[in-house]
Figure 1 (tube, rainbow, N blue to C red):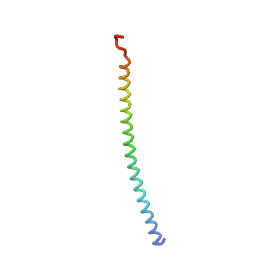
Figure 2: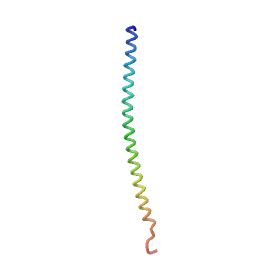
Figure 3: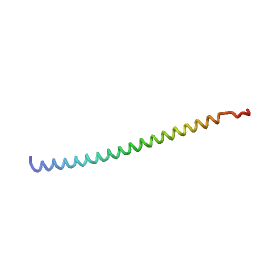
Figure 4: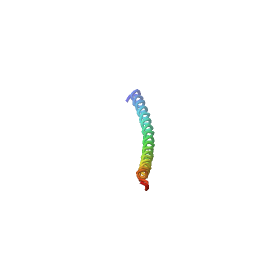
Amino acid sequence: MTDERIERLEAKLAHLELALQQMSDEMARQQKDIEMLRERGRQLERQIESAAQETAAASATAIEIPPHY
């Protein structure tokens, strides 16, 4: 191999290593975002369930007819 060819291969390798590191960093960031969104989804599910239970309890008491009727 000529020195020029080796230098081109080394330059390509350096670019590929940089691209790989950038992709790895981006994947790690996206994984953190996914975990945060999953937790937020669980929180929203709990809030919806709680609101539904409160609504059901409120409507159950609202349907009762007072004894004087």
